Amino acid sequence: MRADSIVFAVAGVLFGVIVGWVLGSQQARTTVPVAPVAQAAAGQGAAQQPGSQAIPLDQERVRALESVAQQNPKDAQPRVQLGNMYFDAEQYPQAISWYEQAFALNGGDPNLSTDLGVAYYYTNQPDRAIKQFEHSLSIDPKHTKTLLNMGIVRAFGKQDLQGAAQAWEQVVAIAPNSPEGQAAQKGLEGLKNAHPTGATGDK
Image (cartoon, rainbow, N blue to C red; front, side):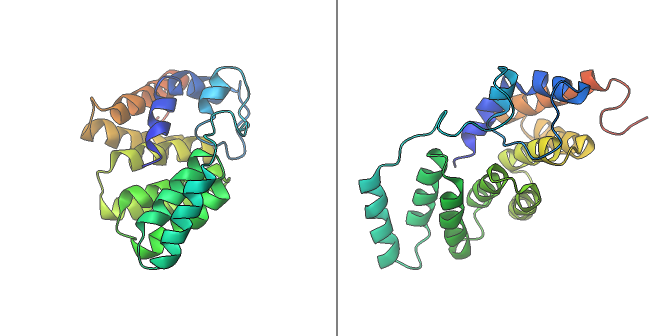
């Protein structure tokens, strides 16, 4: 699942980023890709910097997987692998194309569904990302990576702090000691410190 890296990228910086963002040091009024949160915290700006962490495509492997996919039109796995490779290369439209093909064949996999949602977010489609995450949660309501990413998209893509807090609270309740739970806890601490009188909408 390619979204795993997002968990660790966000875990160490989410607290400070949310505080700064809510207090106005970051003008996040449009969609902000998830992974560059770390870049923003490091003072490199919120805009994505293509190629900063991209893994070059192995063209030979791409061609091999494309051949396997063509020969096996009902097999989701080579399409997932191609989606993963394009995702890692930060070529998100191509990743989406392959993930969507895989999802059409295996829509019951919450990991695949969430990877597709994350790719939507990277292409500045937060509403589609949220809808895809909702599908993932209809399969597995306790899918912590989906819930963590739901909170990130709601906070940074939709400026919905209450919705973000609700998602992160679920992660902490389900798996408090997991990397996802620790990242969610940092997010909640950031919201609390930025809005001590009620970051989640409480008065």
